[in-house]
Structures are given as C-alpha cells and as structure tokens.
Amino acid sequence: MKGITSIIGMVVCFACIFAGVVILGGEIGDFIDIPSVVLVIVPTVAAIIATFPMSLLAKVPGHFKAMLGQESSPNEYIDKIVALAEKARKEGLLAFEKEQVDDALMAYALRMMVDGLDKFSVKFALEDCINGIKERHMEAIAIYDKGAAFAPAFGMCATVVSLVNMLMGLDFTDPNAINNLGVNMATALITTLYGSMLANIVFIPISGRLKLLHKKEIFCKTMVCNGLLSILNGDNPRVIKDYLVEQLSATDGAQFKDEPKSSG
Image (cartoon, rainbow, N blue to C red; front, top):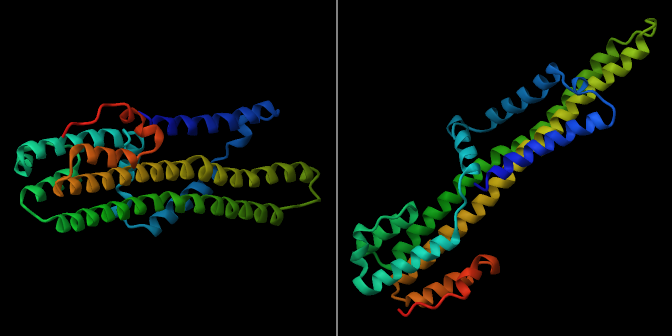
C-alpha cells in the first residue's frame, strides 16, 4: 500500500527532530511539557470542531483509511473500459445489464446505458456525480488545511501566555531569578515548536496526500465518463483505447504503447 509512505514520512520527521535534540546536546525530557501540549493541541482541535459540522468530522477515520488504501489506477480503468467497449460492439449495450463492476460511478453509468438514456443525459448525470465527489473531497481536505493554519497560531498564543506569566512573576530580588528566567523562556518557546510540528508534520502532509488521491481519483472518474460516452457513441474499441491512453502521462501510458492494438 503506497499510503504507508505517509505514515513512514511522519515518523521519520519526528525521529529526526528528536535525534537533532540529542545530537545538539539536549535532552528529550526538556522538550516534553504536558501543559504546552494541552495549550496547543486542545485549542486546535476545538477550533476545528467549531469550524466544521460533526457530520463531516465523523468521517475523519475514513480519511485515514483512504490515505492507507490503494490508489486509483488509471491503467486498470482503461483495461475495463476497453473490455466493455469490445463487449458492447459484439453483444450490444444490453449486455451490460448483468455486468459486475467495483466502481460506483461506472456501475451507475452502465445502468443508464442499459435503460436507454441518450449520451447527453448520461454525460450530465456523470458530470454531476463527479462534481459531487469533488465537493466532498474538498470539504475533507479543508479540515487539515484549517488545522495547519490553527496549530501554529495557537502555538504562538500559548507562547505569549507563557511569556506574560513569566514576566508577571519575575522577581529580581530572588537570587535564582536569572536561572528561572532561562527555564521559563525555554518552556514558553516549546509551545511554538509544538504548533509548528503539528502543522508541518501532521496536518500539511495529510492534506497533501488527500489532494494527491483526489486528483488521481477525479482523473479516473473523468476517464470513466469519457470512455463510456465513447462506447455510447459507438466508437471503435481501438479508438477508445488510444484516446484514453493519450490522457495518461508518458509513464502511466507506457505499458500500453507497445501492446498490439485491438482489432475491433
């Protein structure tokens, strides 16, 4: 599963930071402060909850499942669409009535084709479905984009709170005041570190990964739309295959370039 690289990347980022602390002569314990964690993470999560409805937040576990799941494969979609085109050419569109496909959009399109809808009705219906998928994906991605904005802001707020408390309690008549000043200043800056780490190691990578998956899925859904409309138009399977392959990048389409063309 390619999505595991996201988890590996996050773990490596945290590991490098902790390793850097040790290499530079620090101690890991000095960078662990529970009040600072509470001051950064709790307000960040609360702000996200205040921004988005619970119906959307309830889908967060599904986002992680999607991250770790298999990416949409354009090549597999091309194989399936070409197979459908060849079947339609030999047996007609009614042959799709018992066709079993895993992709929900493709299954919906095949049902419309079997029911005899014209290509314009099918096209508009599929485009509406794709737009709905886009909207759903963008709502999910927005959670992590907002988290990436909230975390550093609350990290800075927590730093300001810590500095204010430190300065208000500063007493130079205390012989240990200078020593306490350094310790308190370091603790205040830890909150900024937490906010930055939360944004750049957690929220931004998750957002980036979901955006990549979104882009690839929408590409495949658009390919389904174009391919099935070509079938509905009665195009030759070989022409459909060449058309779809040309939509791929040189890397994705390479395995098709040297294959013998369908005789359709």
